Amino acid sequence: MAYQKIWIVISLYLSAISTIFHHLKSFFFKTNWDSIFFRIPDTLVSLYFRLCGLSPCTVDIDDQTTVHFWTANHRRFDKPSLVLVHGYGGNSLWQFVCQVGPLSKKFNVFVPDLLFFGKSYTNRSDRSESFQAKCVMEGLKRLGVDRYSVYGISYGGFVAYRMAEMCPETVEKVVIVSSGVVWNDQQKEELLRKNSNALEILVANNPHDLRLLVSRSIYKYDVFKWVPDYVLQKLIEANKENRKEKLELLEHLVAKKADPSLAILSQETLIIWGDQDNVFPLYMAYQLQRHLGPKSKLEIIKDTGHAANFDSPDTINGLIKSFVLGV
Image 1 (cartoon, helix red, strand yellow):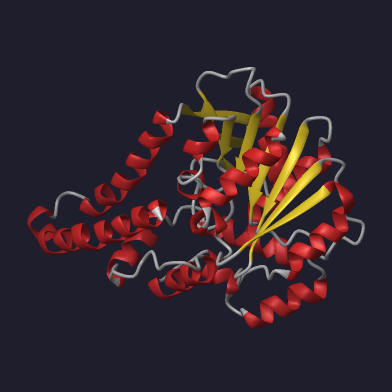
Image 2 (cartoon, one colour; image 1 turned 45 degrees about the vertical axis):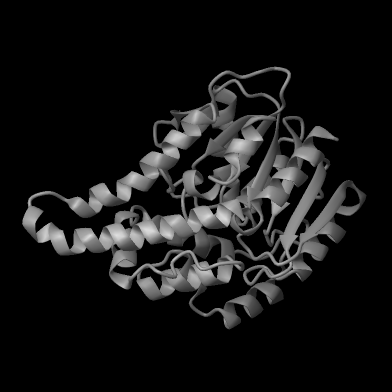
């Protein structure tokens, strides 16, 4: 409930303050007030990450690729390391704002921005989740993080799975949340038929698509209930960087053929799913569990949508801590 109240406050903030700016900005036309206004929440969330003991840093993977991380300030060797891999719908700051506090108390937390999100970028043409995984792992290696567990949600689950597959000696345990990693071609086509504009919605370019994205992702409440469309349009414009590249990531994901020989992970794996997921239906959770076999465990959270990190963060935090710590 506490997190729901936070999002309601943010929604009211966006509505009230932006309305004031909308009417007053003509008096201050020489200043880009929209840009300043939308930086305030990011600044506050960044401050919260710092209060949780994390600092931002940028790692050059090669001469064409840079990955941005939030990393534990003082790594404690009596605490295991945990990597949080975000999905679509925002960078690492916003996706894990409800989780970084509780998890940083038990783990050395490392939170990358995937390529084309936040401050991570590449000039290379590879748009695969395998390339994303390689870049995250190389960045962690250069930060001196040799062993860790990984938690990925939605698109981040695809990346986390590849990380675990490629480096079983490095990745200790795996948590996959709301991620259709083992979908087959028929299931993919069916989902795309039901959601013909899915790609455009995931990289929303107008208020209608953004509202639709949120309503399909978050089950328990409407984040933008009191936010007018012109504010949402300004929000979209303030976060339009790398939209083309983000679309290319999605196009690669849905265009490639399903891998019938997808590796069965050697690590213990926790699968978490909301029973009201409207993006990757619940049957995909059981499908993933069957694929992984006895080393996997499935937890289904009631009254929770695709964005389980927003709908039920306390439950997910508890499950992750219990699973990774073995308590």
